[in-house]
Image (tube, rainbow, N blue to C red; front, top):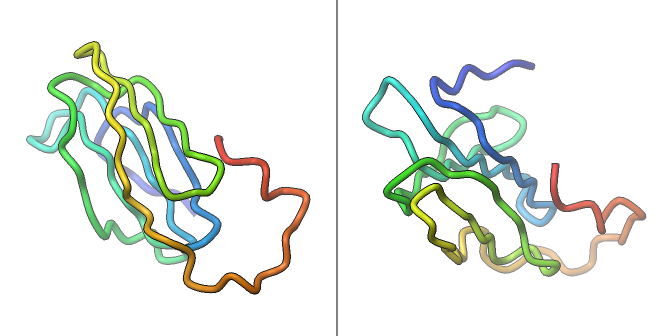
Amino acid sequence: MMLFSRHQVCGLEWNRHHKELLSGHGFSTSAHHNQLCMWTHPSMTKVGGLDCHASRVLHLCQSPDGLTVVSVGADKTLRFSDVFGPPVNNTSEISNLDNLLSL
């Protein structure tokens, strides 16, 4: 599968609880740059966007519980965002890959 985002992709975070992908973006030719974008899997449909930086997003990191994402921007700010919400089902089996949060 390939997705054309129309933006510079600066970071990706997969949320194992909701099967969603968060992407951080920078330079773009459209008005929606410097954004965090949420994509649902497997359709890869954009389900939301968050304008949180005045300049391009440089990096993303997800908390160990999968609820909070921190982004750092070229505007010299750190932004903490609760974008994923609590897990829908707590009875899922824990895999060895559950500790892999950042791509």
